[in-house]
Length: 295
Image (cartoon, rainbow, N blue to C red):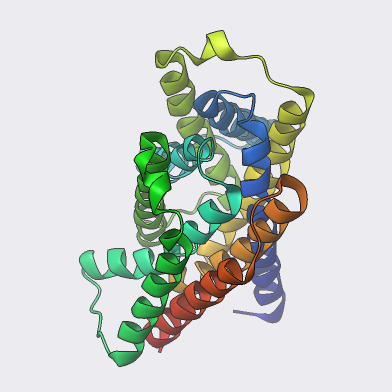
């Protein structure tokens, strides 16, 4: 990898790490008055259409069928399941907690890599990292056990975990099915596929009758389209071609800190020593697992 490509790869990584950290906050603001699946669907379908229109005007043609299949599967896994479930869950789970659960994504990617046939060697460092993650999550939930009595809260937590797994599967699948299509064009096609699925889900759930978003929710959607989808997701697809999936997944460390801070600053979400301890333990655990795996 030459120096300019290396710089571009890490610049794209930085965009993913920072902008996706802010999207948890934007989603939380949006779902206050915007139906969740339609919001996620509009975000990706509009973003995808804008990207595809740009490439159409530049004279690009549709990729071959084998690439379209990959983009459709990724749109289903990473956007319809991955992002759609997180968006729905943030109606009931605060943005910082959602980001902290999503910080476990690198571990799920390692697990999916293992299941998909790559040889993994478990060692005491990986074991220690997993224990730190579990303890960090335990600290976060131990004072909120009563919240699980609310089925929406419990299902929200489970939905985020399922979203993490779907995202990990999509990341590994994308890494193992490379395409010669421009990565931003490919990201746009994935967004269109994922967005259409989410729009259909929202329609089936009758969300159009509740479509009365506030001005804040509309601006949150605009932000998500431009920065969360077009810039950050396009950057993610670009960097997947250049860096190992396990290294890329470390963006989740930065996402968590950004999301927890913004949730505290603007949404009055809790930010105390217990929360920071859980954040540090979880990030340290993921770091140990990822570092040991990458050797």
